[in-house]
Image 1 (tube, rainbow over the protein chains, first blue to last red):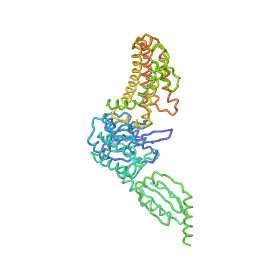
Image 2: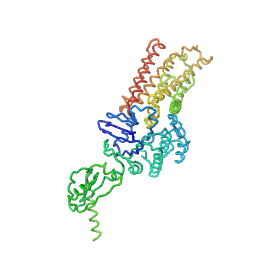
Image 3: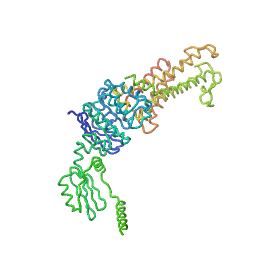
Image 4: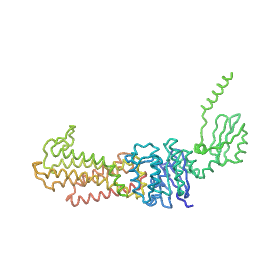
Length: 316
Length: 225
């Protein structure tokens, strides 16, 4: 499959700090790619660079083999872009927004648009300023899809939507994906959304793409190892795949990518009282992967001590 | 394509154009001798009215007040078209339309510039129509008398373009951001000093307008959104 999106060492600095740092990303045709990252990880900047809205300091990006800084109108017509927050002209009615958008495209699937608006229960005469965030997201999606794009780029499309609307929105997105195998790149920090839709994920941490693999592979390869000791826990020795460690009370937690027997033997060599290996869902895996090192919080230990003494008093 | 863009831009600048026309009407009413000094505000004499004026168009104060009103309209239009998009976060929506960025910006400039020129021309023609009507004032009228005001009318295109450049140009410090607008304002005054205005003055205005438009297209192409 040809790469619809390709970036090479794409880098952007803001105030001397890299917002996106050497991004090498390839998204094949038909792929649904979830770009994950915490706030300010560089997701929106990366997406804006793909669409020529932000100019990279170094590196380059291509969509359909065309330099993103000089996308021709014909190429833009093949790409739908939902910007963060679903910006629309609030003074327009939905009907006016449709007429405005339709004016720029040669291919326009009016019946599909009507179906989608009808599905969401959106009346063409409704003013956009009177719509909720979720309804604005639905209008944006309908307008984007009506132009029959081959590539959809969605910047945090479910941001600010409640759980029900989010699920409905994603359901519609899945239906759209199933039409003619479109390529989709979408960013999010809601992992459940990505898990439901994406078949490949990338994780940006401080502007650097740390993970780029199939969704299932990421979930399968990351484990949290919990070691209980009867004394203060020792340091976890450095080893390949060790993402982070955290000591709290007599417990040592380690997050490891590509967990194997070698890791188990290493953990057992610390002679813990007990050893537990926990499988993580995507959200937990993402949080553990992107959180980095944590400091032990003494207050938790004090609370534990208080709780223990309270328990003892209760028994007495 | 042009229809969708023109219709959208016209709808967005309509309130500014209406406010500009209202200002012109107050100015004209004052010039025609109607008392429009409802708020007791007398900074600009021609907004006061209530007393007979000198010869229409040849009284220097009219041209000056007309120029200020035109500048207000031009600035209002240009900032509405630029800062309006920034405030609503709709640059991303607009610039991803299946058209070249220069085309989209060019359409904005054409619509905004045309709205300014039409509104201001309507004001001049209304005043000229009143001045040409016998019995309205005790002085002669000839069309050449309107030329100084047309001069301001055309020059204020530079203020519109300067305002547009200020609006589209990112800048953290308000002073540096307003620099193009301030520079355009100074240029408008300097241009009035050009001799044989309808020959050389027009040429200078056209050249300066082309320069400002080039800067606008350049900034629109290289800035981050």
